[in-house]
Image (cartoon, rainbow, N blue to C red; front, side, top):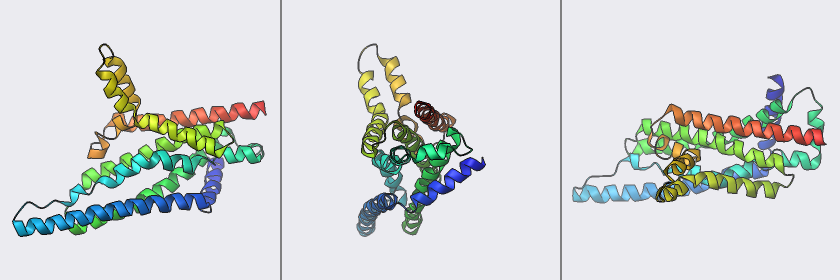
Length: 258
């Protein structure tokens, strides 16, 4: 446990000194802020017009796009945050030095993962300001918001864990980022692929299997609407654990070959 905490502290400090991490966080928060501001302005203008016409105003519960957009953009955010975690260590040869310390590969990988997940969590918490603003213009659904943020947090953890696999596979950060983005997009679009398969005769079983493998099937229809199911939580936890297990095995293989 001490080894994992040591790696976690080291990696978190590196993240907070990384210009790439700050650039990703700034760009993401700026984009979400502009999107939210535009949506808020439209709702305020509509409510003013509705008040004059005696129509039904739109409530703050309509301001729920933030987490959905964030989840979609993770196919870019995840690779950018994780591409250097192991690829840079391997390229510069520091991973071999770190592996000579009294720790195993599991401590090393888990510490790095928890650090980048913490950074993502901080960015996610900052976006809660939009929900606070929503309370100033209406009565947002706090239950739905809770489910959305829990889902976005778990979704982000799963994406970051999957992206770490490719950072362990290659020493090239650009290649790691590209392969990570492609993998996350495939998992994101699995539900759309399943819908297409369901239209083909005799492929309903395969369609359901593909759907359950995808990330959106465990977020879009449930957590995004404030519905928290045990199977969705279990899915994200299994993805995280499975991806970290694969990453550990890759690092072990590269270590013994080296």
